Length: 387
Image 1: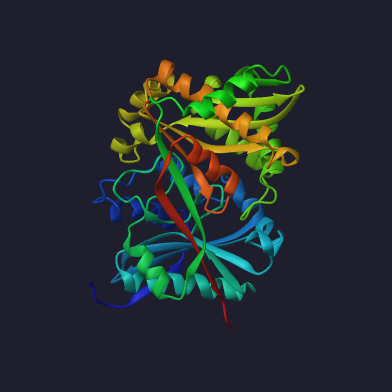
Image 2: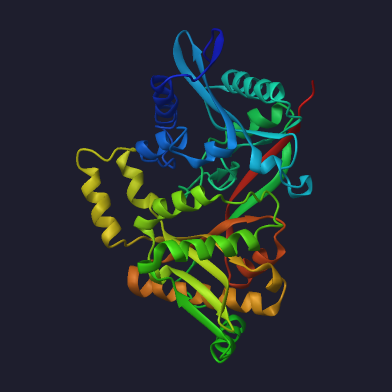
């Protein structure tokens, strides 16, 4: 282990922000399953004015140095939309967060987490929920299972040793998030097929693709269903209008009309399922750089993606239908249509669903019913902050 005093300083300049971003690439370079994000997106994530998360959050980035050399980083943040939620949903008044942790060793991690806690206490926070990098909608949780394969698009990947560092500081799991994988070349069990066939005979049900020519309207519709469907979920924080526009712009290059379904019942849109080609498969060998030649490779892939894996990051059914047989039927129908399209049009063989809250019984039951198995688990830890 390296020796010497660990000095923690706040990030206050553009150059320090660049150093904060660059550190992740250096510290994770030896991990074959870490996927380097595009550097321009990594910078955008932590830049006020570019990431709309900053519109409703106080954020402070910190760098750790030893002998003048950067050896770690962390973000501390308070999401005011999250603190306005009811405490029974996991966030609530007095709850702050930290995330984006990178550390050469345990001494660095301990110093960084202590610094983040002190900053949060100074802002009046009484509890930490972490890691969140930075919003719950981005990369929540610390990986606890599934270190042996890369994450799919928009999922995190951290060293296993970070779990030990976090727990040693008195953190306990508040919630586990799970992703499920399945072989999509295999048809679903006969019972599920019968449920799908029954839905196809129901004149009140219509499953349609999204219309990319009406992208803004479709994005707003999906986010409206999402905000309603997830509003009682643990950890829920509503999207702002700026975040909806930002997410739409970010997703647009990888959105495929035949991979995102909207379910209508008696003419009313009541559910959706979003599926994304696994962009990480093409990003992984790029090392976070688009130039000089990677931009052309990415452009070609975006025009005609042929991913092994399709990821379902989001789905939702309006609250009034939740826990009904119709909700499950609509979900199975959307999954089946997307499964067929993924195989026939993109050559995909694997699906990944999630993340899913460990106690989301409805979604867990759907994942189990189609024969998927848990491939990754993430812990969101909590800890009281004492004065």
